[in-house]
Length: 308
Image (tube, rainbow, N blue to C red):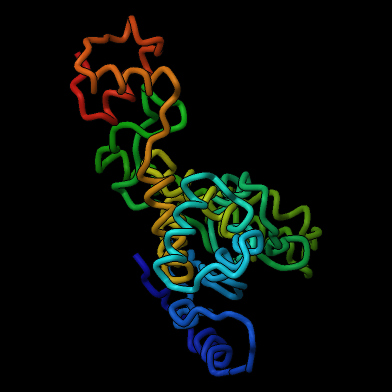
């Protein structure tokens, strides 16, 4: 899941210099995260994620929560129990104390979906001041699929090899032509169009970069949506890397998050009533449950009960 991105000698030298620099601090540090600081992990064909800064960790959550309860205890088992209690009862504020900053390189269309997580601070590479690179995303053939017939936001059947080849050719030709036109427009010896105008010609499969700072609570909200089987593949690739980094950074929080949010299922009052009746041996069907057909089908799936 965590695959290092191949770097140029210059880029590697810059990262080595950052990692070799040492400072003395009285703040909390997390050795497992320190081990991968600044290192870029590969995402898609040209993208990456790397951690460039963080503050706090599991201990920060515990310290914040215990402000109201006195000293408490310091045993790891007690910390784990407290974190699990906070997670299970939706006490979000203590998880807002730790924060982390990522440097992310990603396709523009993924960035536009990503930025819908608004409770974060973002600073993006500016096409007004800098010249954008000739780097664009081309999906692997196995990730090219037709529009789903049952989900307006999703993919359906995988394209045939011939169709995939045609799509990749169209995407590649279109991106290359767009970048050639971009270069022609910004040429200082030619048209010399302002960069802020010339960039509008580039399609959304071109790569951008940003620094993204977020607290742990909102990071988990992001992961709950984006590291899910229903999320778009391209953003899920990034979310899987971030989740692996969360597990390094805050292992107790990551465990509780998986147990109480990601791998759990919330029951509505009518759904809970169905479960109670089934446990009591009563017969109940969808028509008598107060659930819609969709709700009933999802509940039966979660309970591993055939939907007759």
